[in-house]
Amino acid sequence: MAPSALPSFSSSFLFPLKTQKSFKPPKPLTIICSSQEPKKPSKNPQRPTSRNRKRTPYGTSRRSILKKTFTQEQVKFTAGVSADPHVGIIGGGMAGLLCALSLEKRGVKSTVFDTGMHGLGGRMGTRVIDPQQLIFDHAAQFFTVSDSRFSKLVDYWLEKGLVREWQGLVGQLELGGRFVSLPSSPPRFIGVNGMRPLADSLLSETSMVNVVRPCWISKLEPFNGMWHLSENGKPRGEFDAIVIAHNGKCANRLLASSGLPLIARQMKRLDLSSIWALLAAFEHPLPMGDGKVTFQGAFVKGVDSVSWMANNSLKLLGSQSNGPHCWTFFSTAAYGKQNKVPQENIPSQTAEKVKTSMLEGVEAALGLPKGSLPRPIYSRVQLWGAALPTNTPGIPCIFDPHGRAGICGDWLLGSNLESAALSGMALANHIADYLQSDGACPEEFAVGLEKEFEAIEGHDIGQFALAGVESSLKQHNEMSAFQLAT
Image 1 (spheres, one colour):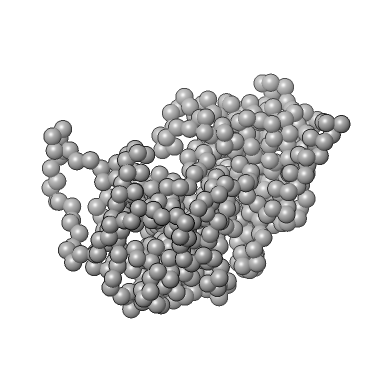
Image 2: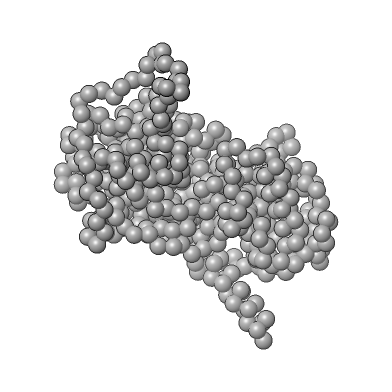
């Protein structure tokens, strides 16, 4: 991506730069980076036994992580920054990618570490099933634009052919098959070939961004004025500053023994919903109580197990689609919470139960007789255990100048792709300003470390431009309630 295409942020965008005085957390102990090199793993480690087995560095329970988070010592870098600074970014979703791009615009090189096996993007996930040529956007479904800075970026993506306006019929589907269309304004945008290809293409024109994937950064260690990152004992580089661009239990574990208690404390305040995704391909168009489904996407109301459904084949391929109809169904957050299991190892019995329940929910939403929904020719369930934030501090980014570490992500501003992009850009510019100061007067660069959180209002699958999707749904629901009352 051409660096000039990215909008810049003024310091006023990072409204309060100084922490509030009303909140006084326990004063953390401070450790100055020592000159002793971090211990390297033994070439012949002793096999642990019941007597010599050591506990994991951060524990596995929520209580263990909390205890580590609130009692760890604060790292404080005192040496000046490097002449050619290098930033490590952990997480290759929209926030992490835009942070890297914006750093390049400011002349700062970065390395993005991402766990993705198939590509970048995080929740901008697209799954292609061969040889049937099935395609599913199985996370972010579309996005809207409300901020002028993000609008400039989307205009650039449109010019490059990376995104397009989704002009298919989208609306609200009520239990029993009653569908009400939503207005086309504000526009809804999608990746031309899916959300993941959009993410993968963002770094195609960069020269100062390195990508390492799949990679699970498991340890952050300060030494000699630099952050040393490692993956299960394997060194992954030294960095002047680090960015945490992901969340959930993995981020909490990573931060629990990092020497960044203020950063860790804010991450632990984040609450996340769980959402089940069901990918299902049908040989023919789905029926409805009064005919065939004509819409491409619908917010579902009145069904416990389903909150959203979209026809990926029509959305992404349009009239060129002459194969199976590939649908993505999302559960409600309440259903996800009730049926939550370890997402890395979903029991087959749970997977079958969720699949059956969600298909029954689709059947009911479409107003079909029980047992009449066609059987899918392909199906797969996936649990997004840390799907969407339910609370937010309402600030673009968080930065600890003493520890030279920051956080970016959609949850800092809301619950959508636009928030993720704005957060990544904001943190990049804040870090660049800090690096230019050579670390002088670090207190002036503290942001968001004690900001209180507030609840997020939005749909189970995220927030969209309030003037459009959400307000239209609200108006329709209020009208329905009025009609029932009269």
